Every structure is written in C-alpha cells, then in structure tokens.
Image (cartoon, rainbow over all chains, first blue to last red; front, side):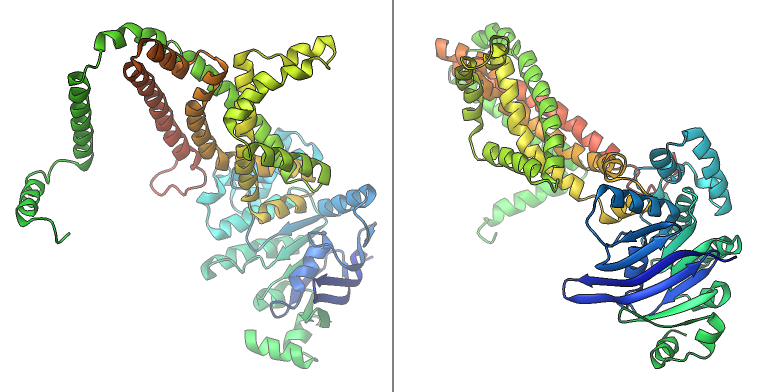
Length: 250
Length: 281
C-alpha cells in the first residue's frame, strides 16, 4: 500500500572543496513524517534543498513520484521536470521569505494564479480556507511586515499548501522565531501531519519529533548515521555520535 | 573657537537666549531672506536693468515648456533603456551582457555634450548609406536629437541604478518563488521587478531632477529652451546678468517643486515596508 514518494540515491554535493553530502540515500513513503536532525553544517538543510533543486547536487538521482531527475546539464526537458517536482514539493523556509510587496492573501494565491493559471477568485476562495486553517483568515489583507514571526511562518505554510503539494519540506521552520511563537507554528505542522501529509522536517525541536515523526534520521558530516522511530532514536540511540548530539540538545 | 573675541561671544549668547523660542526653520528662512535682500540691493545699485529683465522675461520663460518636454521625454526613454539594460547586465548570456556593458561603458566614458552633438551632427553622415525610407531616422531635428542623446546617456547611468535595485531584492525571495515552481521569467516579472521598482523610484526621481538641469546642454544644438533663450538674449544685448538670473530662478523653482514631490513619493513608497505602529489603514 505505502509507496515511496521520494527516493534519493547516492546523492553527493560539493561546495568547492567542501564535501557536504556523501552518497546519501533516503526513501520517504507517502504519509510519512521524517525528521532530519544533526549539528549545523551536517548537511541536513542541503539535503532538503537538493530535493527540489534549490541546490544542484553534484551527483546522484532524485525521484519524486514518477519524476526522476539525474544530475546533468540544464536542458529544457530536465528543467521542466524540476519545475514539476517543485509543484509537488511545498517548501517552508527558516526566514519565511514571504513576498513583502504582496498582502497575505496575494502571497498565497500568487503561485496558483501565475504558475497554474488559476482564476484569482477561485484561488482566493481556496486561499481563505487555507488561511482559516492556519488561523490567519482575518489577516488576509495585511502586508507581511505587520505580522509576527509566527504568523509569517503560518502564512508561508498556507502559501506552500496553496499549490496542493504531495510533500512538504520544512527547513528549520522555527529556528528564526522567538520561543513564545514556536508553538503556533508547530501546531500548524502537527495539524498537517495528522491529515496525512508527507513531510520532511529539518528541526531541532525534539519534542515535536518525538510526538509527530514516524522516523528520525540523524545526519553527521554529510552522512546519514542512524535512523529509526523516535522512541528508538531518542530512547536508545545506537551510534555514539547520535547519543552525544542528543545529550547536548535534550 | 577660542579666538572668537569675548564680546562677540557674549553678544551671540545674548541673541541666542532672546530668540530661543523662534523655531529653527524660521531662523533659516530669515537667513535666506536677508541674503536675497542684500544681493538684490547689490545688483540694483550696480546697474541691474530691471526693465530689460521684465521686458524679456516672458520670452525667456517661454522656453520652460521645451525644457520640461525634453526632460520628461528623455527620462521616459532613459527609464525604458535602463530597465532593458539592467536585465541585460544581469543576464548570463555573454552576447546580451556584452552589448549592455559596452553601452554603459561607452556612454559613461564620453562627455554628454559630445553625445548630443554626435546625434545631431554625426548621425546625418549615415543617412547616405541608409535606404531612402530610413533617411529620416538619421536626419533628426534638434529636439528629437537632444531627447535621444539625453535619454541614451541617462539610460546608461540608470542601468546601474536599476541593476543595483534588482540585486538588492533578497536571494530568499528568488528561492521562495522557485520553490513555488515559478519560472525564472515569472520570478522576475512578479517578484523581483515589483520590489526593485519601489527601490529605484527615489533615485530615478533624483535622476529626473538632474536631467532638468542637464537638458540645458541641448541648447548647443540650437534647441530654443530656457537656457538657450536666456544666453542668446543676454549675449546680444550685453545683459547676460539679467537674462541668466531669470533662467536660473526658473530652473531653481522647477527643481524645488519636483524635489518636494519626490520627497513625498519616497515616503509613500516606504509604506508596506515600514511597520506602522500607531493605527492601521
């Protein structure tokens, strides 16, 4: 029944002399919530950003659903496949990256209207439902500058959902937030997970991971060191490096 | 400061104390008025011909329309060229980027007055080689020639302004657009340019104010604008003081008016980017 929606094979990424990802392979099944964690600089964000090609891998294969992209020159057909992968993967950034010149509602309908050619009215109706869901319907006409960090991040989640993605990628979604605002963002993510959304989350929020993740993956120096269900990873990590990291953050 | 005599210092302190309630802006204005009065008295007592000035003022000021026409048309042309130039300068295509960088370099490396003269006097030499229906394009009358030269010149400088504007839109914005499956063209049109435009409107206003003054250079190819009229009438009657002051006053007035509106526009453009603390809209 469960199908792999994301398959990453033998992924390598170099930044100049720096070898950030070392032959990383990972499969994620439909409806799974995977938490990627590890020290900063361990390559977890880079791995996430390779999935929708915000970073171009140095070698390896990315497959999202039936879209398979190998490393190669940016030819038209390949670019189109990458674009389709991006349609299927919503992404939420650490720094929100809302469009400051657009209102909250305009932020949410921008991609459906521009990319999918959806009518503004129809897109707006769907957007209002999404904003309702993240608890921000009354802020639809505000500009992002007037929102708190937590509100911005919830808008960013609604904006990504507006493209009706199969997968949501979260790149440290609460790291730029004041502590008292983290909860509202995690609640929105928990809600998504409960609805069966496939999610890959890079985060240091071990409480969230324990509660929501199906699987936790520990990364260290560009490699996947250890993975398993949260009870196992947090309760009795097998690898010394995982144990040391968890001791530091918990 | 120690060298200021004690009596002067005392007098200054006394004056400061007595005028402490007068707003600073009023004091500034007062200084201006005093300078104007002193200059006026000086001019009048040294044979300044007010009657001559008043007689010719309408004719000279009649050139204001042409000054404005040339400036407005040129800034529009410059804006279009700068937008194309900026996008070309940011292109990874070596041909497109090469053409744009050569344009910017050549224009910025040569005098504006030479460029104006070039369009007016050198272009007609090409007309011989052009097909007859194209000849008109090389035999430009003075006003279109002046507009073309000013527009092309300012376009080169503004290319760099626009390029900086586009580049100052954060990388996160581009990533967010890409992650939403927007194409590079859609990202530029919908996300980068609208944000860049806000950033470049104030400096473009400054360019326009500079253009109002540089437009005087088209007088060299015989365009009968404000400065041309003032200098011609002044030279012919040996009354350059009177005529140039008329023209100068007009330039000053026009640039002051536009500076005022430009400052207002700048404040308005900041909205949506500056958090309004007091009350919503």
